[in-house]
Image (cartoon, rainbow, N blue to C red; front, side, top):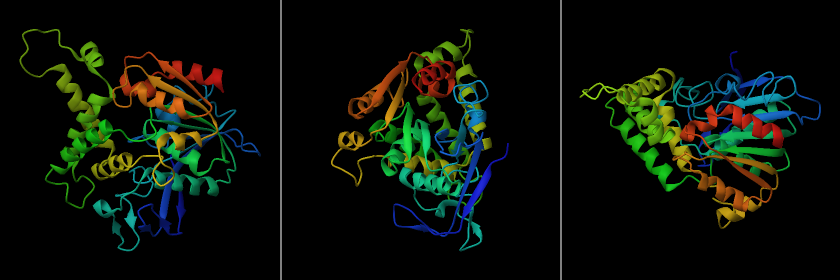
Length: 337
């Protein structure tokens, strides 16, 4: 199913003060919205995903699943700055008639949420029954809950945190250094920085999984090998996969947006105070083996959110567990919701 695109011709002011002359928001919907809107389930996606959530999270969303389009009206919007139809480096700057490329302005998680709100209003959604996000999607959920508290009934957060950690920022910086080292990075064309993006993805894969996962699945049985190792082939393959479907300029831009994430910025004195202002019922899930956004990040959320339930899933899949362990996640969500 192809994404729909909402085109707003109203100037869109970013948190930085810069202005986009117009904004495009690609999105998918599934099911039918009830008159009161209480059956709306809005999913905020993570770094390199798109708005077709029923495809990439099919174990959780679909007929007979925990989130069922026969009961729920499911919405997912491609984030601002991405390369899957929403305004970003690959879209046209109406002032020049050419793609933005690296001139696309810096964005934050809050800018993404403001774009979501534009789409919510366009779709006539007055209430969101359940707002869901894992990883970077969870950043959007927390920001949105603080921005429009009266609109959102419940939150479901997975493998996420209240602010980007020093660990996360360091990883993203290493990934951007890899992209910037690509001699084509400065060029204005869709494939600029592609080799750097491949290296950036390789760095990312080390944090999405972990030591145990790689040893279990990528070890070579041949003790005589001195080259062409299985783990090396796997990392190169994952890098090629991303290069074939994503864009280095969007990746660089979105990693910067993640670094900006801090729900206390401009609001209150600290994260604990900001979290105390989120009054919705919240379901939190952490993954025991997650080294990118470890359970301590979700435990901090649970300690300061007034109405939160925190559960951990014992999984060997690391950070990617929030996408892979759909049976466990679906059972927990069904029981809670």
